[in-house]
Image (cartoon, rainbow, N blue to C red; front, side, top):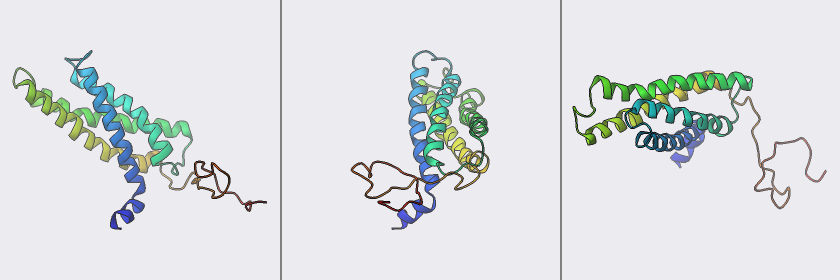
Length: 178
């Protein structure tokens, strides 16, 4: 019961976390695919590219699902702000990895390959993603999608036909059957 109340109260944040989890998996997959194939000596570049690609996915999912009813800006302005905020998020994502590799020297030959890979994962994927996620949630709600209820909610219309449970409709002033 308390979990249901918490999710209803913070539904945007919960959806944002689901989108973030999806993008986390996408980022991690692309990062390691690049790092282990075409960019083996460039871990910061691989993570940067992976983060940029998942940022595009994040925009679509956040705009159409997490912050579906928020807005208040023209779409091109909103998209530009989204990508500016995300650019700051990318810097926040790669900064801990950069520090791990080049400040704390947690790289081969100073440390073993295993220590390097664990440090890369913890610094870039875990700490970097967490920092960027907190920043993005705050900045998206504050700057990118500032007005709650700026776009109409979609509601289900019961009994509107055989596929009505699968379709979303905007509410109208018409009475059923008339």
